Length: 262
Image 1 (spheres, rainbow, N blue to C red):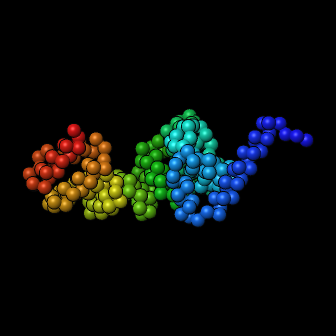
Image 2: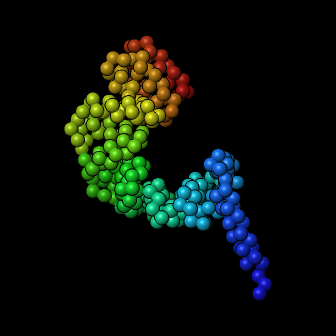
Image 3: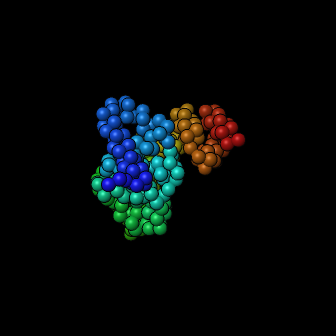
């Protein structure tokens, strides 16, 4: 029986995807990395081929490309569908992304309760972003009863995995006594770890600790890093902190930050 033009086109497309997947499976890690991190438009067809053959990492990657509009037209609903497919296969990172979609209303009606549920599924599988996001939901009481000690526990788990934002929030909890006994020493430790991870808010808090401890030269280095990598809000906060500074190193930093704001 002869195929219609539409059926022939579908069969040809399926065969092309299968051939792309076969070729990907024979590639070296370097070749595959070069292909998938190169031109997003070219990479999109390869990623889609792998996703349609049930490769969870490709399903997750395709979802991200659709969510961000990289290499493909932005489509939040399609992104959520691919994240959901990967999540059903047990991919913890995809579970976190499903939670992000429900938290922010990307491709679906906003639902904090479902967001928290998906974050918990991701967190229980040891994914650092899932742990961090679940901590935020517990801290704020969004979609789940507020529980500061539990939030602190999830921040601590994510921080121990090297999550810079979680390190900073763990430090803040320890500094303020949110869900725990106050400990300035432990707070300073986690601010430093967050700063060293490259997170600009951790860099600002670490700089503040150094300045308070009488180390203006070291504090100046971290204020600069926070300003260079941070937002306008962070730069404004640094200028407010340094408005009354008398140490030459800190006065110089204030001038540099003002220049960045211009």
